[in-house]
Amino acid sequence: MQQDKLKKEIGLLEAMTMVIGVVIGSGIFFKASIVFAQAENAFMGIMAWILGGLITMASALTVTEIATAIPKTGGVFVYLKELYNEKVAFLFGWMQSFIYVPGVVAALAIILVSQATFFVDIAPTMQKVLAIALIIFIMTINVLSTKLGSKVQLVSTIAKLVPIIGIIVYGLMSGTAKGYDAIFTSAVTLGQQPMNYAGLGAAILGTLWAYDGWVGVGNMAGELKNPQKDLPRAIIIGLLITIVVYIAINVALINVMPFAAVTASSQVTSDAAVILFGNIGASIIAAGIIISIFGALNGYILTGVRVPFAMAQDGLMPFASVIGKVDKKFGTPTNAFIFQGALASVYVLSGSFEMLTNLAMFMVWVFFVMTVAGIFILRKSHEPSTYRVPLYPVVPLVGVLGGVYVIISTLMTHFGSSVLGIGITLIGLPVYYIIKKKSVEKGTLVTE
Image (cartoon, rainbow, N blue to C red; front, side, top):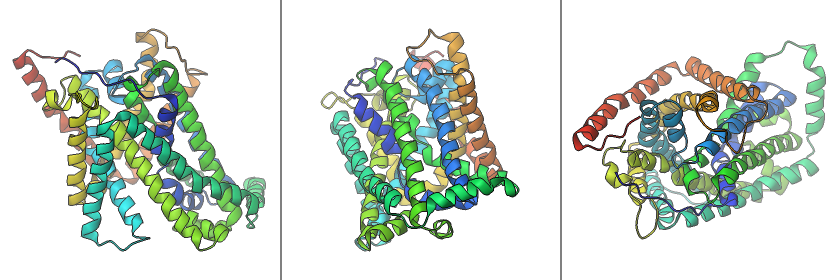
């Protein structure tokens, strides 16, 4: 099929805020208490965030070389197709397009609307209606212009960082809970008691979930003005900023609230804001959470539709000629947006989004580890990239081992949903063979 091309109109700043905006969602406001509780002391809690950041950065540095060598719209789908084969890429795209992305979009929309009930009472049925309206609104922005959608991402990312930076600055400077002493004391006494490796491992796993989502910017590589230079910069700088923010806010929380209070709190960032800024602090954080989720939602919609679009352009989607079309007026993949928005809206109405995303999460990490490990295939099969991962092969191995740890941990703790996730992914195989058969019949076969 003749392929329409998307415009190259995304700069470094917009790409960088996509990384930050998608990664920093609602987790930063709620994860700290869980991570510290699992780590069991202040020092190990901070170490969990640092180690999770290092594992994430190792994966990012590795995938960046792959993305720079294959700077095409579609991200992981394209990498898997070129490094492994079309069938593996299709299974990833099938799971991503039909289950994971629309499920995450539905979940984020519902969470955002429910968070708005802090300011105004909204009935459960109306929450679903507003969630769908929100999905349509953000989708419309991105249909009108990719540039506009990326600017919205820029503004929302800056806006979400304002209350976070406020807590960091005031918490580090004005906190009275002696958090620095707690971190130092727990570090000094570390060798005086048995090491809780299981707790630390669970804490690191929690941070890896919080760091997830950065790879989505690769979905839009074909729309970056200068992907060879800007894509590695966007991923590395964006993640570095995120890691610094995560570590800094967790140190600030320990400096504002006693360790026991942090681990016991269900909304630790809001509680810290009340201590620092009075009752108005809760309103500030509630607004910050709404803006933060809005940015993550926009980022998922903006980057997520590029996977079914890329699949359609390769003739690997039902109704490929429709979904793979670029709108002549707006220069955006309008039909792909409508497809993903419709699925997300159905998931909102059905209430099945949480179950679906949980089922898909295991396979997301399986494909992600395959992508990171693809660096070893890339080095043998492709010309040297303009960017090369440092300390090869040590850095890629750290990323692979970190991902394998997530897979094993998920399999052990959520065995049933993991197996169902595998089953749902494999349902895509007969769909793949049907599409290939029709391609042969129409004479439009896309070879592997």
